[in-house]
Image 1 (cartoon, rainbow, N blue to C red):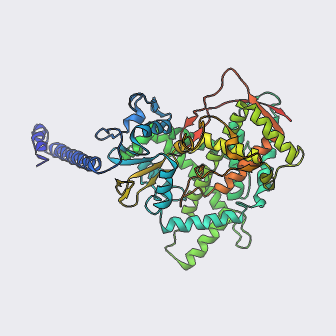
Image 2 (cartoon, one colour; image 1 turned 135 degrees about the vertical axis):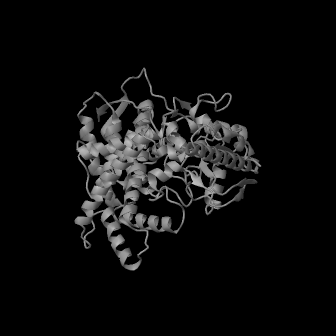
Amino acid sequence: MGYRWLLRLLPLAGGLPDGASLLLGSLLFLAGYLLLQHLWTFHRAVSRNVPPGPRPWPFLGNFCSLLLPGLAGEGQLPVSRRGVLLFPHIVLTDLARTYGNVFSLFIGSRLVVLLNDFETVKEALVTHADVFSDRPNLAMVIHVTQQKGIVFAPYGPIWRQQRKFSHSALRHFGLGKLSLEAKIIEEFKYVKAEMLKHGRGSVNPFPIISNAVSNIICSISFGKRFDYEDREFKALLKLMSHGMEIGMNGRAHLVNLCSWLYYLPVRPFKELKQVVTEIRSFLKRIIAEHRVTLDAGNPRDFTDMYLLHVDEEKMMNSKSSFNDEYLLYIITDLFVAGTDTTTNTILWSLLYMSLYPDVQEKVQAEIDAVIGRDRPPSLTDKALMPFTEATIMEVQRIGMVVPLSVPRMASETTVFQGYTIPKGSVIFPNLWSVHRDPKIWEKPDDFYPDRFLEGTEQILKKEAFIPFGIGHRVCMGEQLAKMELFLMFVNLLQSFTFGLSDETSKPSLKGRFGLTLAPIPFNVNISSR
């Protein structure tokens, strides 16, 4: 009965040739069928006992709030300007004050559930980990990652096998061990040389820090570093940066409403496809080179160890998930996730040191007392430098480079805190809200490293401090990131003092929201110590 109105439209095609008339009638029928199916799905989703939230629009759901300024609700910050996502984490935190710590939005007809305080996030990702550890099959994720690798792969036996092996292989090449320390210290020599080129002048730290962090990943993954002027290396970093910019474009996320948009020859989809293709081509060449020079008795790096494991698996299991293609996606995860998050955390630390010279001086005084200015720092120094560690932790808390975490998906319909969460719902743990919760953090918007100190000589552990996430899918690179952050931060402040190049124009601390939360570009004046 719902399709009778379609039949009334068919006579409109009566004046057309028979073939065109049939085609138009078929298209009208198909369009009507899809429309009614969408409305039925949308009605069922809205009418269930789902968490409360702002009223969605048909077809778009609440997606329009991300694309059109001023539609986030009265008194809310606009989330978008000219299609570019601005501060969704802040808007979502504000919405939680109206709708509660568990509330919902819709992307099209798909339910999105926001978790906005620590106890709720912990209950979902730890207590209900088996239900909320999957990844959403959003069109953007599928097109870019093919749901392979470590970060975006579905939760299950294949993911567990790949993560277990990858973590073991990374540990073999120094993850969490002092043996990796030498690579990080060696890379800092190039950072220092680049900064010294500018003398006491103004310098943009973004490319220097990004080069260094990427090279540390390269040394683990490929067994070598690249010169900062290497043409291919510069091209790779440029591609990654451009990919992040596309991630800031709200129009790109329309593909999650209409997956076929990805195949249209229009920006930003055309550019995104080019970025993905070129990054894959670069990594495929390196994997191919490793395959040709592979020595089973002398694995040089993570890529070698994975390729050797692929060969072992082929002999025992023809259906193994270990193959050269899967390696490509794991290395992509290491590069994109490992480089962007750590780079931006270090950049936030330089910005806050420039804004808070008293904190910078206190960190430098601790460095001088424990290490001095001649020898390089070691991870063994960390236990003797509580204020330095507290400062890094405060940068992670207030900067929160992954404010909405990596989205999860409900693998089955479940009841959570009295609400029905349908299978396939997307789950966003709002880590920004967790780390700015005034019930946990006194004056949460203030930069105050002492909040992580118990007395003056001991770090105060806070359960709600979860910059790397929590639960089964906690960041695999947590140990590497902690090593990089400590050694690079201490090296920088041991060697230089930083200050803003233009004190009259301080960059906004709201940052730029993309795949991660990056500082707005800034220059610093550096002086050697």
